[in-house]
Image (cartoon, rainbow, N blue to C red; front, side):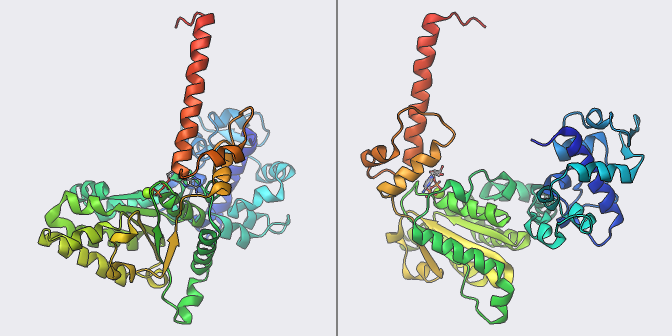
Length: 402
Ligand SMILES: Nc1ncnc2c1ncn2[C@@H]1O[C@H](COP(=O)(O)OP(=O)(O)O)[C@@H](O)[C@H]1O
Ligand SMILES: [Mg+2]
């Protein structure tokens, strides 16, 4: 953990430098520093360092107390403003304590200290999560775009997740070689999308994840968003079609509009087989219209042009017809994990646990046919059971009266 005084000085220095340098923009601010300053979709200068903004940005509970002992700090009781009485002393104090790696995590300070230290502003900025992936930005954009009633309706159908809200990362998911290859390819395509556009390569960026429930399809879509620093717009087709029958086609269009507004982003369409089900059965005309709208919307959206990466997922590939398959450029299989993968999943899930006598390979041999999701559940049950047993033996010997 960083020391509280260091964290607060770093924050105040960042606000001062940012206010002076018109060439920097919100993408240069570390994401947590942006949080207190978002207002109606923008971050305006000047950024003022106060007890409140410092607390939100750094997580330090009592920011003024943390730095009040330093010679160069001052504080206005009334406004809460935190100031430096001697800026160069503050900078020296900071530079004496900050490693290069630390400075490079903050593009504003990397730009400020590029001459003093071995840090690179461009690199720092490239590694910093962009402002348009902030939850606060996404929320204001959605608010602006939909009026209140519409927004409630829409948010029932579409789940928008900011990268900062995604807990599971790609490192937590055990992938087959094929999956790894596909993910690597798409990451490269997104990095080089301008080049791909320039050579006219457009048939990329529509993936279909196919496999039984619990094999990690949803997790990989979200983790990919997290890795790329993009919002993830999630829709379940069954939701879109079941709730507002008459409105379905409109909802489909709106979903794609949301994705385009939030782009670059990932649009994750779950339960894609729902298309097939409704096309096959002779259902309501409204649903048929919606399905056609969906297929058309998919044709019209593009990673290269709109910066929307489309990922469909289905547990029932057998139910999809050619019209649906044709929409995707790549099919990514999510098989049930084999024994070595199961052992890896068990190792990952138990990473934080201390288990005596744990043999993932043996356990993997005993769990043939289970998915990643099943394995997680099995372990959770085992842990809860162990806790319950402990509780019973404990309550036998101690008296817990509270
Ligand atoms: N290959 C895997 N490696 C690690 N965890 C997995 C794997 N497959 C599934 N899981 C875990 O199982 C749970 C359910 O997975 P999910 O992504 O919802 O599956 P799906 O969308 O295919 O039904 C998640 O907690 C996920 O992390
Ligand atoms: Mg899923």
